[in-house]
Image (tube, rainbow over all chains, first blue to last red; front, side, top):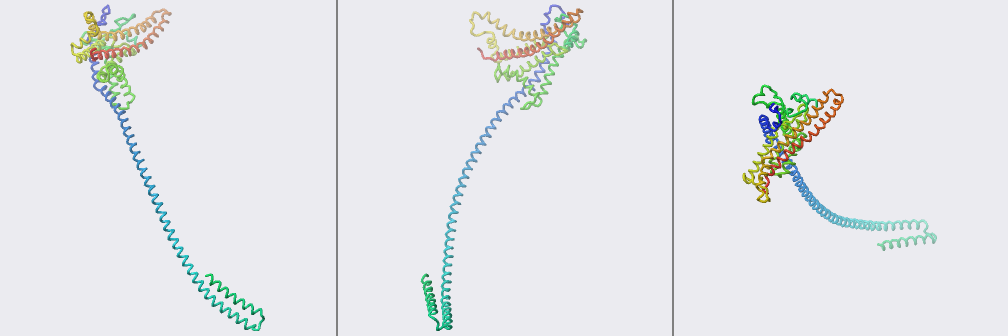
Length: 180
Length: 270
C-alpha cells in the first residue's frame, strides 16, 4: 500500500506501526524468557555442577571412612588373633599341667593299689602256706597212718616211698619259704 | 508450494514479483486509513505467533526443572546453552558471558523463529523481510553495546577507545577518526539490520521467482514451456532447503556480531 509507489527505495523505510509491534512483541519475549526461564536454567546448571561435585566429594568422604573402618577392623582382628593365641597357649599349658597332675595321682593310686594288692596277696599266701602246712601235715600223718596200718610189715618199696614223700614235702616247704 | 501461491496471489502479485510482493493487506480493511494500519497483517501475525510459540514452549518445557532433565527440558536448555556457550561465554568469558547470555539467547531465538516463517507453507514470508524488525533489533543491539561501553569506560573514554586506533601516527588521525567513528558507531547497527533484512527479503523473492514463474509457465499455453515448469517448481523446493540454511545462519550471525560488539565494549583499552 505504502510501497505502491515506483522506485523501490521505500522498502528501506520502516513502517512505524511494525516497529511498535516488533518492539512490544520482542520486549514481552525478553521479559518472560529473561526473567522466568533463563535464570532458572542458570540455577539448574549450577545445581547440576553442585550435584556432580558434591557427589564426588561425598564419594571421597565415604571412601575415606571405609578405609578407616577397614584399618580399624584389621587392627582389631590382629589383636583378637594375638589374644586367641595367648589363650590357646595358656590352655595348652594348663592342659599339660593338669595331665601331669592326673598322671602323678594316677600313678600314686596305681602304686597304692598295687602295694595293697601285694600285701593282700602276701597275707593270703602266708595264710595259705600256714593252712597248707598244717593240712599237709595232717594228710601226711593220715596217709602214713593208713599205709602203716594196712601194710606195716610191708616191703621195702613202700617204706622208700613214704620216706621220699615226706622228704619231698619238707623240701617243697623249705623251698617255698626260702623263695619268699 | 501451492499454498504459498494462493496466499501470494491474494497480494495481487503477478509475475514478475517485486516490492509489491511484500505488501500485505490489513486484515481489517476498516483500519487501513487509521493509525492502526499495518498492525494486523500476516506479518504482524507472524511476529506475535513467534513470540507466543517461544513463550509457551519455554514456560512449558521449564515448568519443573530437574537436575536430570526430561527431553523437553533438555531441548530448551540446549537452545539456551548453545548461545550461552558458543557466543556469550566464548567471547566474553564466564562472568560477563553469563550476564549477557539471556539477552543474546532471546535475540537468537526471536530472529530464528521469525526467519522460519519464510519457509512455513501458507505464510512463506518472514517478518524480517520488512526492514522495521531488523532495524528495531539492530538499534537495540547498538543501544546495548554503547551503554555497556559508556558504563565501563566512561563517555569520552569509550569514544576514544572506539574511534582512535592505537599505534597510528598522529597526522593520519583526521582521516582515521571519522572512518572509525562511521564504522564502529554509525554503520554497525545499519549493517546488522541490512544483512538480516536483505537476506530474508532476497530469500522470499527467490522463492517467488521460481514458484510464481512455475505457475506463469503452466499458464502459458505452450505445451513445451508448461513441461519446463516442473523444473521451476523443483528449484522452488531446492531454494526452500537453501533458505533453511540462510535462516539459521543469519540468526546466528546477528547474535554473534551483537555479542562481538558487546565484547568490544567490555574489552580493556588496547
